[in-house]
Length: 138
Image 1 (tube, one colour):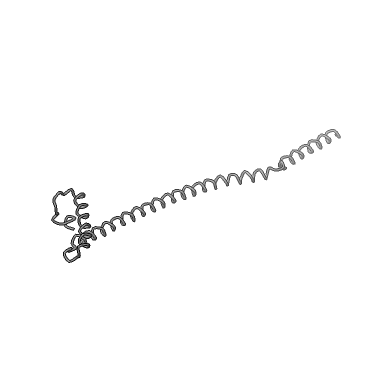
Image 2 (image 1 turned 120 degrees about the vertical axis):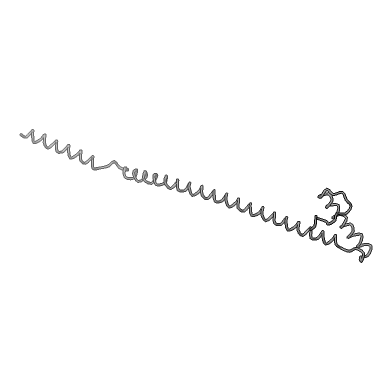
């Protein structure tokens, strides 16, 4: 009986040791799991960061395109305004009565009128000496 008791005690001791092994984790296992959870959460955050970065890049490209369109529109508006002012000036010069001016003023404003007329002819393709109305009725 002492052998049986001895065998039983040994079996119990072995079982207790096995239980302790199952209950105890190797050192660093908890830290390893923590690192793994952190890495997985960073993967999710990387995806969020990439999405946010893509959206920011798209927003920047959109705003740059809008800015470019605004600049082009402003340029066109300035060109139209300039052309209107130029035509207004040219009409005023063409309607100027040179008979009341002295010789030097007549020569100066006559040259301006001639230049306006030549420019008008080159744009309109007209070869007559005088158009019925400069700028087609403007």
